[in-house]
Image (cartoon, rainbow, N blue to C red; front, side, top):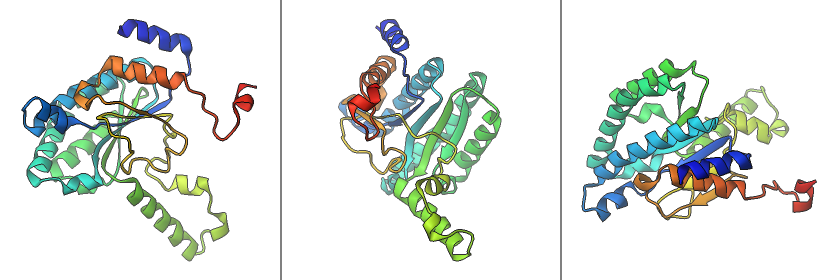
Length: 250
């Protein structure tokens, strides 16, 4: 099936430049199999590995994964500790393979919130892959879009107060330059797994005209065919950006 889907995608063209994914359903996947919740997170790593590989092969430029939200710190401490250990183990295990495959790793969110060891591992991974020219893999860690916007507005307000900028000069472009994603194109396609239909404080500003794709598949079950089907669905849509169908077709 994957070969046929890939062929269809390549023939259709218009492959999304930037895909963002809310990786939801790890815990429910584990519960459905009578396994501890951390088992779902562990299996979800296999999905990450496969999706990163496919995106690289399709020459997608950016892949942003909602890895750990600012709200996730409210989860039970035992689960948070297990996730942080898994994060550390995963980055140490995968970084050489990412580097070998020309993947550039970066982070959005407050990296300072992470425990020392995973924080240091992430910094080392970013530095090791910073010159790679293939897929840009962006992990949203301790990330919240509202918090990101508040920080951006505060920086802009500070510039206005100091006379470095006039309030009438504030524009979409000015706000965009103050976000974590200032050097990243807005997502073309945002995928959410796990059957929920919300975007959960993820890339709120950046997703104003992003195509949304929701699937009931839990993240550990989301593999190549599921990604390819999401891309095909995207390719069959008409992105109008406020224009009429007739204007877009001209």
